[in-house]
Amino acid sequence: MDSAVEGFLVWCRAERGLSENTLDGYDRDLRGLVSHLNECGLMRPQDVNPSDLSSWLVSLRARGLAPSSIARHRVAMRQLFKFLVDERVLEVNPAELISAPKVGRKLPSTLNEDEVSAILAAPNTSTVLGLRDAAMLELLYATGLRVSELVGLQRSQWHDGWIVVAGKGGKERLVPYGDRAFARVRAYMATRTDMQPAMFLSNRGAAMSRQNFWTRLKHYTRLAGVKRPVSPHTLRHAFATHLLIHGADLRAVQAMLGHSDISTTEIYTHVAKERLRALHEAH
Image (tube, rainbow, N blue to C red; front, side, top):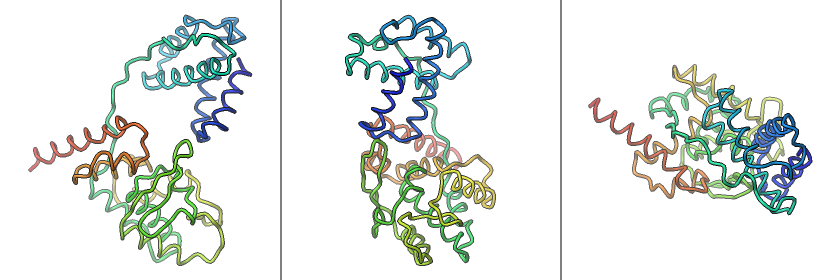
């Protein structure tokens, strides 16, 4: 089973182009599965049957994992055994008919437009670091990028009014942005005298990391007086929700976010409706 997981992860990296975060998640979840199967005396994929896999999911529930986490583990399990069938290690997929726990759709937490404006105005743009942070925040809110896409941006991806984004699975998409974000990015880039290909650099001259940007965002959230928890993904949620509130087409938002399935984007219509309902009740 250990060799099967190793082969699956190598295939995911080479053939599917999955991100390191996704690969780490698959690795972590599948190592738990292998450990469970080994405890049951099952060392080879050929020894595994559906009841063994069902018992693993039951054990996850007994440990108190949320339905969404169990569903994620099931996806990793199904992908692994599908790979083994495709590679002719197995003739039948023992995971194929195992059902997932029902997962309620939790609406993402988002910010109102005043809160976003306060965060965007928080950096001190009289300094180079402030210019960099203002540019990153403006571009994040203007495009709805994932934080990994933002910190991974190269100069060659940035154009006047649009950027080329390398998303999940290596899929590229074109995302437009407005004049305000362009002005912020241009002001920051005017301070750069280096030849580094990365768009955004840390104060040590290396490419910005996700952790570094998250720390900066928390700092500006406090300065802006926003009390609720804010992450880079919160600004992505705000981007999508505010576009829909102002009448954007759902398919256009899907394309900009890089969602392969529109059902993923549709959750923002529910957020937008809740916001409109609250506004109606208040006014």
